[in-house]
Every structure is written in structure tokens, then in C-alpha cells.
Amino acid sequence: MSDTSSQFTYPKLHNAMWPGLVGKGDDKDQEPPISLERMLELTAAAEVDGQKFEGVDYFLFHPHTDPDASEDELKRIADLIASHGLVVGSLVAPIWPGTVGDSAMGDDEQQEKFLTSIRKACRIAKVFNDIGIRKGGVIRVDSAESGVDKWREDPTAGTARIVDTFRKATEIAAEHGERLAAEGEICWAGMHSWKDMLDTLEGVGMPESFGFQADQAHTYLYLMGYNAPEHALLQEGYSQDDFDAAYTKLTDKLRPWTIDFHVAQNDGTVLGAGSHDKTGRHCLANDPNGKLDITATAGYWLDNAADRGIQHICWDGCMFPNDVLETPATWNTILDAMIQVRNAHGWN
Image (cartoon, rainbow, N blue to C red; front, side, top):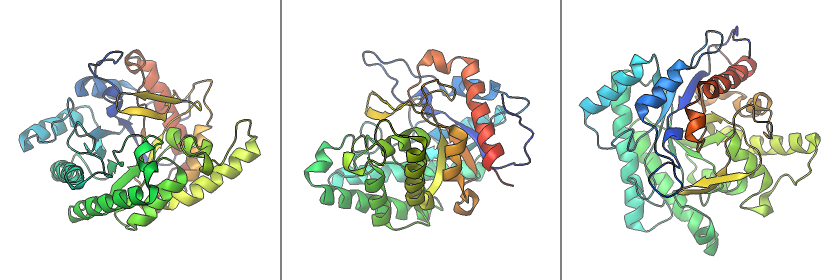
């Protein structure tokens, strides 16, 4: 375990609630969702040498949250979170088909659904802000266009449509004092490689309100060019020197846009469930097959993080099996990894 006696108080250490939901469901071979109440209990119980999680990042959809929940219901949720000594940070808008939203690359009706999900997320954010349970963080989005096949039919038009949707969404968010962060994953069209993600960020061109959410597991697959071999920065069998050069290039391009950060581990493979058909495999921090030195690579992303408004970091363990999520040692291992990141790269 790490030494928690750090002089740094930032970034705050948050746990994500959506691993209890993403990839879960009632379909064949899916595990049932884990309730918000249980995810909070597991989070609050974690402790490493007196250090605990300080907040949660939160998905705004069923069964954890009705995106149309009344203010009274949202206050109940806020009280529940506060009862565990936690605050709320970044929020995940319900942008996907089957939730509130639809593809950012779609027709006018689909685009309007996407924008509606942003309006709903901003409403909830304001309630949490006004209550005082939330004092910072972003609203997370992606293109909600699962897979790249349709995008490849006309990449220029596809990216232009995604950019148009993101601009309109950003204008809505900015009116509410919120920032949107697009999480680059290989499963989302127009965001499926570092180069395509950069093209989208630059196309939106609103860095004060629209930025990048870097996830260590997902961005590792950017290096490998999994869904865009032409943009690969590494090849199998790479050396440490090769890795360092590639990671420097990757982060030099995307770090200036990075306004939210997920600590994670990846074993170099993809994992999918439900609508997330292919995405970076999240592994435990101490997975023997992990490809990343979590602490070292986090430093590339967190350089000058405070200047970009980052106040917390979050662990993302999407699609961990339920038995892993229900194991207390899982959360202590994760918390320990995050403490090491803060000890190495934190600030006051």
C-alpha cells in the first residue's frame, strides 16, 4: 500500500458509480445492475491508511437516477450521497439511444434527442450545485454513434455532423455554466482514434466549454490504433523507449484539451457488453497483465491540470464483473493507486 502522508490536497479522489450500470442489464449473459445505494456503500467503505474516497462521479439515468427526477428526489439523492461523506463531481449525460439521447451523427430528430439529454443533465447539475453537493466537474459526452462502420462511409460528413451537434450541445451547457468533456473511446465514431478525436475537438473549437476526458484504459488503445491502424503510434513488441515517445506524442496532442481524467488500467485487449461493443478493457490496478505504469502515465495527463480546471480524478472500472465490484479489496486497491497518483502529481 502507498504512503498517504502527502502534502497535496488536490486532485480530490472520486469513484465512478456507473460501473454498477454499464454493460449490466437483463439480456442474456448480462449481470444485473448494482444499485446506487450499494455502490455508495462500497465506495465509502474503502480506506487506505486513513484516506478514503472524497466524492463520486455520477451517471444520470435509470436505475440510479431518473433524468426527469423531481427536485425533491434529487435532494434525496444528494442527501444519500452526503450521508456517506461524499460529494458529486462530474456527471454523465444520458446521451445514448435507449436512454434520452441518440446519435450525434444522426438526423435532425436524433440530434434533438442528444441536445435534450444535455438540457436534462444541466438541469440536474444546477440542482446539485444549488444544494451544494456538487462544487465542480464536467458533464461527460461522446458521439453516441456506436461503431465506426457508418462513419467510414463518409468520414468528412460524419465528423462534421458530430461537430455540429457538439457545438450546439456546448452552447446549451455554457448557458448553464457547465463544461462538456468528450471521452475518447475506440467504440464511438469520430472519437475512435487520437487523430479523429483531435479533429473533432478542433472542429468544435470551443476550448473554454468543450474539452477532452482522458481515460488511461481507452487512450492506451489509441496508441495501438485499434480502430484506426493508420493512426497507430505503437506496434506490438514495442520497447519502453518506443512507448515513451508514443505516449509523449499522444498526450502532447490531447492534454491541452483535457479537462477531466480517469485513472484506469488496460491489458491491451478490448472488452464489450451491451451497447459498448468494443472498448478499452478496464483492469484492476494490480492486474499482472496491465500495460501501464499508472502513476507514471497519469503524470503526462495531469501536467498543469489545475490550470485547466481539473479538481478531481476518478477511477473508471466499467464492466468489472459484479463479484469483483462486490469485493472490498477491489476498492482498496483502486484507492491506493489513486493515492499514488496524487502523491506524485498533486497540488494544493
